[in-house]
Structures are given as structure tokens and as C-alpha cells.
Amino acid sequence: MDFEESELEQMIRSSVRDIAEDYDEDYWRDVTDERRFPEEFWQDLADNGWVGISIPEEYGGQGLGMQEMVTVMEEIGRAGAWSATSAFILTPIFGGETLVAHGSDEQKERWLPKIASGDARWALGVTEPNAGLNTRNIETTARKDGDEYIINGRKMWISGVAEADRITLLARTLPVEEVEQQSHGLSIFLVDPEDSNLDFDEIPLDGFFPEPTYNLYLDDIRVHESQLVGQEHQGLYHIFDTLNTERIAGAATGIATGYYAIEKAVEYANDRAVFNTPIGSHQAIQHPLADAYADLETARLMTYKAAWLYDNGEDAGTAANIANLKAGEAAWNACETAMTTFGGMSVSKEMGIAKMWEMIRHLRIAPVSEQMLRNYIAEHELGLPRSY
Image (cartoon, rainbow, N blue to C red):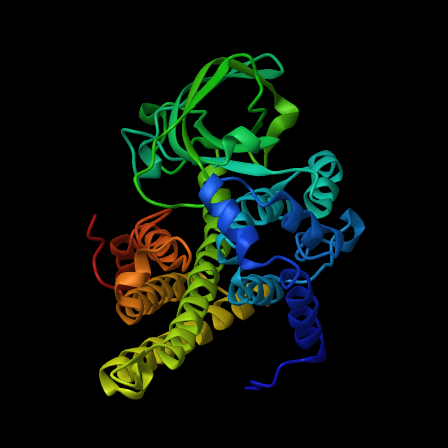
């Protein structure tokens, strides 16, 4: 077991930090206030190879792994670009990782270079009003008609659709009554958000999250069979493959944001003086900050372990779920502690602390709740009976 960072990891951190330092707090304040995608920053990352870090070199990527992606995400978050970390979950994970693992040669050749270069953005279409986290119960259907599929249904909480070039969409290709297990008979398709038979409307959010999210309405959308990803009827298993990387990237988002919240709180605690004494000299301020930092360090270790397992072809399921669970808790504690440290100033737009707090609270329930993470650990690691 070697905890020393390699020269590659050090180079990644240095390069990403150099890029992030060109974007100051005013830039990120405008991005979050306007709820817009940080196009300029994202393109800088792509131009330097960091968006396509886990895409094979033959498709324009770096050919590295989840460990390196976590390093990139952690560094941009700690440099103040924490609101951009979630973009890695949508495009490099739901687009890139899905196609690398299950895409056809044609799909890889068309889309992976565009993802790596920053010229393509992605969304994931899984969640539905009547299914929620019970993905096997989705009602969107894809009926085969010659060399096409006709897709009908509704999706919700689909982030980034308005700016996406494609949606990785899950639909039922076999009726539930025709399968022995509900997990069978689902398939993945690449769907164009600009299809004339697809409508979407934005869901108003009360609180901050970097990506706008939408309801989707699919009415007789025709998709050519070449847009099927992986094997027909095996789509849920393909999605499960991608979920481990989603869990790891979600953990990295939480950790990166938590570290930045603690950094800002420590800076404030050193500068802010009350009764002629810096508030950081008091244990009532010090100890919660120390606890929050210790929790982040612990969650970070599990996140890198999960990434290492995935990159080395090992079963990363339990580690990825633990990492996501503990990172969410640690990041929330960090943001809570930062809010307390800043006191009334925590809600000022100038500080930006409240936005971090809001985003991290959302990440504890989506795209998967902490209760479902615990269910996975209990069933798959501890051998307890299925509870849902």
C-alpha cells in the first residue's frame, strides 16, 4: 500500500490548478447566479485533455482511469470551481464511460472524440415519476418496428437536457409480464434532445444546483437500431456498470466541495476578530472544523480505494457506495461547519457558502439516496436480507 502520489498525479494537480486559477471568484459567482454552464472553463479543461481523461487515446482521450478523474475533480473543486465538478458525472461518466464500456464501434468513433474535445455534452434519462429509485419499474417503452424503435413515455429530474447533444435513455423493450425478472427487458438508447417528438420543460428549483433539471415527454420517437447501446434487453445491467463510476464521481464532487468550504471557513476564522481575538482561536470553532476535515480525509481515502478497484477490474460496488455515503456526510458536515463559522455572513452572496451548502444537501438524496446506499452495503457486503 503506497500513499505517495505519483509524478503523473502531481502533474495533473498542477495543470488543473493552473487552469482553475485563471477563473476567479467573480467568474464563479456569475456562473452560479446566472445558473449557466461554465463554457469557458469546461473548454479550457477539454483543450488540456482533462475532460477526456478516462477516454481511450485512440478516441482523443488520455486513456487514464477513475483515479485520475477523481484527482481532476478534487483539484478543480479545491480551487473554487466546485460547481463544475458535477458536469463530470453527466458527460464523461454517463456519456463517456457508458460508451467506452458498451458502445458500438460506430458510436465510439462518433461521440468519444467529441466528448474528449468538449464538443459534446450528455444527459441521462432514467428516473420516472412512478418509478423513482425502483428503476426496474420504469414505464417508458421502446417497441421494435423494422430497423427502428418507437419510444413513448415520460422522464423527470433529467439534468442538463437543454444543452445536451444526446441522452443516454433507458426504456423497456420487453413487457414486464414477458420477463422472469423485472431487471430483464430494458435497453439503452442514444436519443437526440432536439427530436421533434421530444418535449421538455424545466423543473423550478428552490435552492441551488449547478445543472437545470427537466421533465421529458417522449411521444412516438423513432430511433434507429444503430442507436441501441450494448445488448438489447440488458440495458439495466449496463446502467449498473456505469453507476459505480457515478458513485465515485459523486463522492469526488462532495469531497472537493467540502474541502473548499473548510478552506474558506478557516480563512474567515483566522481573519474575523471578535473582542480583539480571532474567532479561530476558540475551540468551539476549531473542533468542528477539525472534525469536518478529518471526516473529509477519511471519505477521500475510500473514494480513491473505490476508483483503484474500478480501474483494476475489481468489484468496486461496495467501496463505491461507501465512498458516496461517507463523502456526502463529510461534505455536508463541512458545509454546515462553514455556515456556523461564518455566522450571519454565511448567507451573503459574496461568500458563496450557502450555495455550497444547498448543493451538497441535494447530493445526499440524488441521484441516489443515502438509504439506498445503506441498503446496498447491508445486502451485498453484510449478507442481510433484501429490505426493499
